[in-house]
Image (tube, rainbow, N blue to C red; front, top):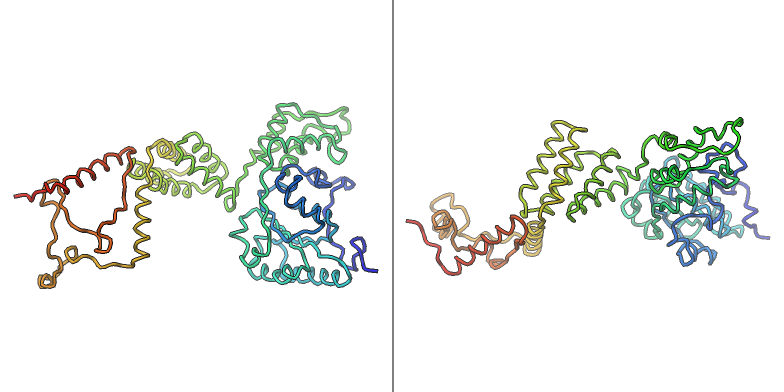
Length: 460
């Protein structure tokens, strides 16, 4: 008789993640891991009635995948629940402490299991982005063959951190931060459940609200803070009768500081700076200041913030307010001279200035249109009249002949061709009607009109 999930061959029994409360020393977050998909909070798009993962479970077959999302949203738990739901054995590796040798050992057991009549083994790799290319390549043939069903978990963007050959064999599922309602359900279950605090702890409405707010969508954080606050309030003191009520101060002390959903090397970093720049671009100084404060509080490199402000000053404000670039550069200089925390004033000043300044991206657009022509046409010849006749005899070849010095004409302007012959009529820069750029537009229009009337006269 072929072996079953309950009778794996010797040495092949997979590691499993405990979810019950028999082990009293387990942290609250471990004790409260969902025992089934129906206990999972959030991720309705994936495990709801019409979710892609739910449909896989109903079909009884998983595909290899990457679970991508911030910490504390249930990636590891979801991997375990999926494997249990389809009755597949599961092996667990951490990319921070495992290598190719470990992968080969698991694959050997998985192959033996299938040869004895078993199905595909789920190989769960936490922090899969930490596997180097050789380690990831070692997985390829076994994922392709179906000996293992790979489930990788990562907080980093897999499209950048997982090599393309392996990624092409995986489906990527994005897990989102949990909502306040999701965290509220998790807290309420932990307070009442026999695996959790079993009614020994009560939370006042303001303490509950604060706990959820500082946890920033992280289920592990909310349970760790709750457990610590409950301990400080005396929940573990056998002499205390009746439920204890952690105070706001207990919650704040347990958290030490607000839990910031931000990783300087990961998606929190890129997502927050994106929100920062888009708020500046969108003329919202309040939002821009909030994201600035988030980055500073999370320990972001302030020079990185200053560089982003300088880029935004040219990319988004441009010639609508040329002073924006000056102020952004000045803020960067202030940061060099005085450092944090004092330089926060300069960063805030530059942020507010750029967010409230008139906007134009026409300079950048014009530049990239010019780049496109360079790529299409190559390096076109400089018109002879613009070339420098370094030696007077070069003029016999037409070099430098016919160039008109604009300063010799009224308005310091004269009609002549400056672009290569193939692009003589090309116009890249089209000023807007915003801020200072409106004055630039007026001047350019006036010059064009004067050239058209032929009124530019040579000075005597």
